[in-house]
Each structure stands twice: as C-alpha cells, then as structure tokens.
Length: 269
Image 1 (spheres, rainbow, N blue to C red):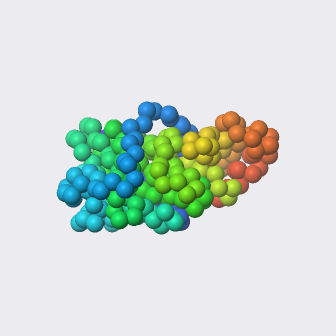
Image 2 (image 1 turned 135 degrees about the vertical axis):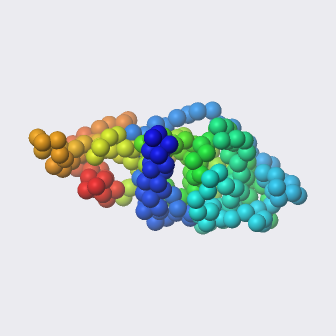
Image 3 (image 1 turned 60 degrees about the vertical axis):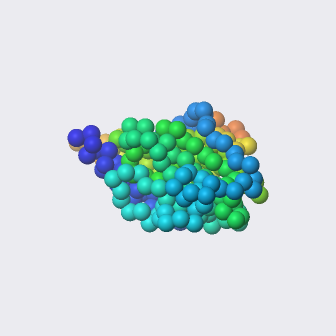
C-alpha cells in the first residue's frame, strides 16, 4: 500500500514540476524546511583536466550519457547530462553510486573545454528514479541546481545549489520540501507542500548571500459545507520571518501573496 502511495505521489510531483517548468532547462509546485545539513561539496581546481575514462565520475561529459530530460522512467536512478542555458553555459554530469538503500549522487560541473570546475556530492539520496534539474528559481538569470534527496508519501525534499552573478561555483543554499517549485511575481522562490486534503502550505523564500531565507507562508485550507464536503478554500499569509523586511503586515501579505497564480491554482484544485 505504501509503495503504491509513494509511486502515486512521485507521479503527481513529476506532473506539477513539469507544469511549472516555464524557465526549466530540463524540467522541474509545500510547509518548507530550510535545512542546513552538512554539505559534502568539493570545488575542483579550475582548469583541472577530467579523468580520461568516461566511466568514472568527473569524466569528460562528451560521452554516451543521455540528457537528464530524455531518460523517461527508470527502475534505477540513471546517470545523465545537464546543460545550463544561462550565460555561464556550464555542463553537469550526474552519476549515482551505491545501492537502493543508500545512493550517493555526484554532480561534476564542467566549464570551457570540458574541464571540471567543481564536484558536488550529496551522500544520501533517494532511489525514486528522479534526477537533478536546472532551473532559474529566482529569475536572476542564473540556473539553480536542484538535487532530489527523498520522496515521502506527500512531498519530496530537495537540496538547492545557488550561484550569484558571474560566479561559477555553486553553494548549497539549503533544502526545500514540497510537491513542486515556482517563481513568484516578485521573483521569490515558491514551493507548495501538501498538508492534507485540499490543504496546502505555500512558502515563499529568497536567496540572501547564497542561503535560502524564508519570508512567509500562504496557508490554503478547505471550507467544510457542513456535510463533510469542501465548499471552497481560505487563504491566509503568516510570517515566516520576512514580513518586516518587506514592510508588510499579515493582512497586506495575505492580499498580495494569496493572489499569486500558483496559489490560485491550488485553491481551484
């Protein structure tokens, strides 16, 4: 039963991620948690030649690996390639090692000449068949690297890697948990987490010095018509630590953020 439920959740997550991928370079819509779990991320010396064998992590990405968006469904997490479409034009080789209970995801970041710039390692990722994605979550012109970590019965958990401006090295900004991701009208990162039937927490985040910082949460809750049926939903914004910086009261935030298209879509579903 739980296996079937997890599979169904994975399908819903994939559908919503695809629907929100207007700026996806591959394709990537929750109560969010910004975890500052220890990061295992090593930066390779710029200009280092990659190992000659294409079978080892960090090898030249001009291999037979398929693009990550072209892998379809897989029983095991596949190795694949990502290519950014931002001005940096970086390549990302994604490889997985270990068994189903413990998978290590290694992402080698390549610059000009297929030379390794950086190696990013997530030591404990899920075997759900999902792979990392690239997406400009804050609409700043640079792609974020989104690495799936775990799939639960309701939401998925992702590590978010961020780069600022003209820099090339990525930094682990934190973790987001939800069904999918979007970008708000004000270029905040928006993630929607399923709380229960017709119940969602849509959290808004921003990047501050390469770290994710929570701003507020739009709470969508069902209205019972008295017979056990849903007669609509309410939406209320609550402070997650960012209202003062935005100069908004909770009433003002409710009016503004509950009108976001991504929030309205969930209220209609």
